[in-house]
Length: 183
Image 1 (cartoon, rainbow, N blue to C red):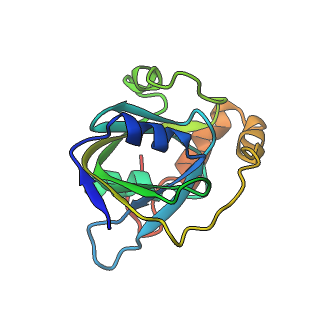
Image 2 (image 1 turned 135 degrees about the vertical axis):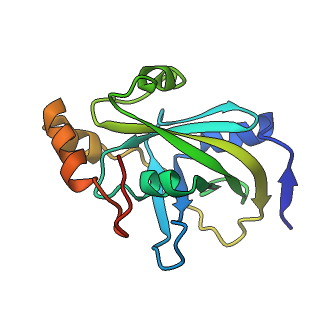
């Protein structure tokens, strides 16, 4: 049976920060729009900023649905699953916003990450004001062994200049698959 918590306490924080992968779900306001669910990972890209606030680094990728959906309505859910140890699933529901690379508040948002990986290809910082914290059993989540972070995303973007990434955002990340503006 799941439980709802008043905040991200020390025990939940420890669990959340120990997970090497988490999932981000957003949806546009339109009922005809596509729901987006994205896996995220890489050590150092997620932080708990307080009992009701978390953030993660958003890297350039094939799409930018999360940013578009947050601009549209702000709704977001993050999910953390135990793939090792006792079974548990933790969900953080809330309202998110983004601060894009190159904007005045970007450096201040980055300061919340004590040990981030290479920042060259970071597209934005996503911050979530958490209004619901819950867990569930996770009894059917498989046991899996963590072997390490993949380096492909960072290696791929290391070949791009800062100017290349500006063009990438303007061309490949200009709109969501439903046509919502991203930046």
